[in-house]
Image (cartoon, rainbow, N blue to C red; front, side):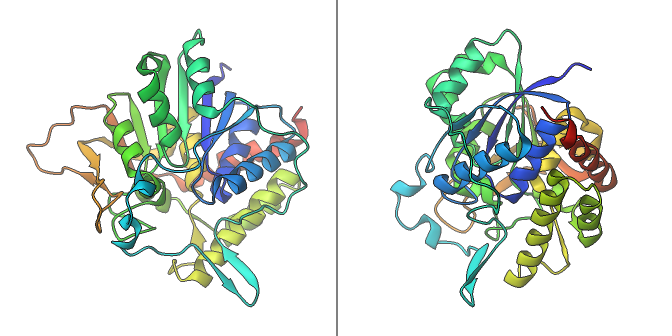
Length: 330
């Protein structure tokens, strides 16, 4: 089996952690490195959580510290006050209820991240690569946008971008936006308009393939540390989402693992369309929203493919099989 060359870009995050497990345990990928940015939590937390997951998996994949803030959003006061943000975390009875915990309940990492910063490493790694590499961003697109701006020639070394982000009919953090795109709309717009081949794994697809407590039990039945931790993360996502009032059903999408699985198993996406689209970078309600031009006259000039539906059963099967391989990890 020829393993696909991949670079992950995470903001770890419960679903990022499960996606990392799939990428590193499935045997389907040659993970060249992992970049980390702000996103689900501030960078110090997302970085530490990434290091903890690497330790759990007993892998030596190198980790690089990336962007701590978006390209421009923090320079303009008031952007985040002009829409309705749903909080994904709150304190209750002295305890934090969060879909993405600040710190995972895992042993402290023994090894640190690399000294080289993510954007510089990405440019060097791609320019020196003898083969094209698939980039899988699972958080804000800040690191990738900065690298493309600094060295446009890396575009020739990118086979494809398989990105978890955006939502057409489904949104989460605001009425119009998914959190990854909302966290850095300017970066999302830049990457989507780059002309690179992009598969966009949206909330439409991930919410069409979400997991419930039945899948929590299936992950527990794997009976190894990877399965146990994945089950813990999924259960916490479901519980926290319901306590925070952001779900009407007792289920949760593991968004990021769908993007990783789609790289090696494109059939897991059952409805994908090449469409004309863009990201709103204004300062009002629609900021960070992914908008598709559905008019009959619309022509999709850029190779952006938007995923709408996915096969939940296949996704769960793939995840379970990957997590079962934990015991054979080096």
